[in-house]
Image 1 (tube, one colour):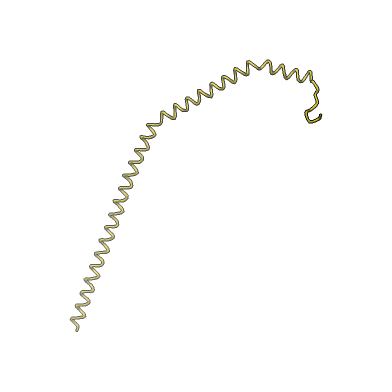
Image 2: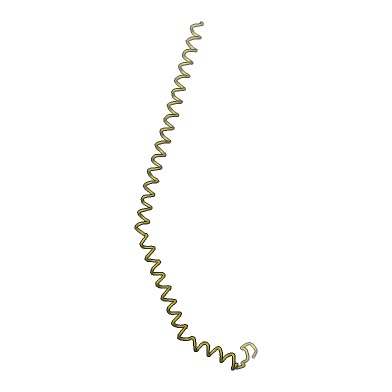
Length: 112
């Protein structure tokens, strides 16, 4: 009987070693999988960053040209406003002075 118990203990010890080896193997596989996944993520990140940089380079001139066109349009509008100001300045001043100096009393529309 003693040899049967020793045999069982030996078998149990061997089984524990096999389980430990399996755990070590699984742990190593998980570490390897994580490392592989991280390297794939880094590679994908680099690829997307490169694509973004290419896109920015391709469309960088577009933004500058739009800004230049907008600036030119604003400048043209300002020039038009300045021209109208200088053209109508004297007539507006005359109209305001006349309205202040020579008032024409009128009844309001709602007063009638």
